[in-house]
Image (cartoon, rainbow, N blue to C red; front, side, top):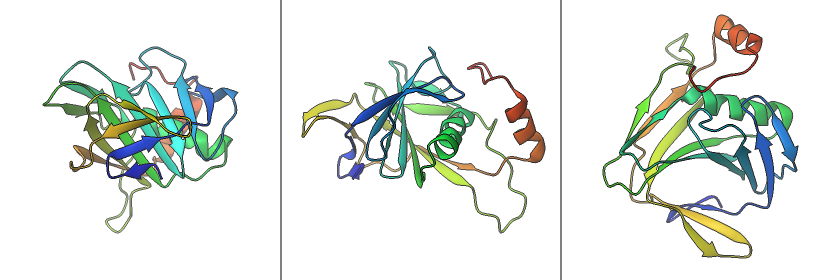
Length: 179
């Protein structure tokens, strides 16, 4: 399982490249894939993992804070759903930093809007802080992020995009990190 008593254990078995718009090269495996970001400073994450219907994005920083732009995580999630036709039940974002006090600066851009009070979010991003990852000797390379005793620092509800937002997103030639 991806989640465990340490927080997360990641067992990549395959790898693909992602350029903010589409999966480029590589083989996508539902039981463990590393998603390498092709652009420097791509949105709000450096690398992602997909395993067992869970999408985990990681941002490595030496800072006490980091910006979290959910629209970039939505873009990757939607690309996985559409191009690879996989299910994504859980979305986790981890800020990896050696600092004790850490916080996210969350942007609301691209989170969509709740239309009715009874409407449920399309998905939720649970954001955590972890000290530097540790490499473990496993059946193959595996990494652990340790945040087991912590509640999420942030829980970002992602609503369905309005027609205008969806059209703008489809019409753009690609998302830039400055959006």
